[in-house]
Amino acid sequence: MSFEVDYGALGARIRAAREKKYLTQEQLGEICSLSTAHIGHIERGTRTPSIDSLCAISSALGVSTDSLLIDSFDAADKLAHLTAMLENKDPEKVRRFITMVTAMAEKIDEI
Image: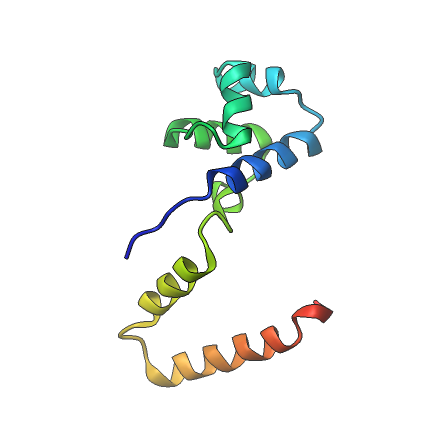
């Protein structure tokens, strides 16, 4: 199973978190010891941040790396990953989990 990161979506979440903190790209770059141009490329998805850079950015923005990466994988990859996670788990617990997820999916517009 392979995962392809949507770096455009990752960059958009970084930009949104940065703007929520009222930081410029230059300020974020200074905090993270990255150039303003590099921050811009990361936000546009034209450069891939290293793990160290991603951790520095998430720390500077006060958000988890998970929150930046969530939804960076396409839906099929997420479902495949979820399926793999449920393998070899207690069948009754898996059934209850699927029942809960199904109920939430039916009410998604109300959430």
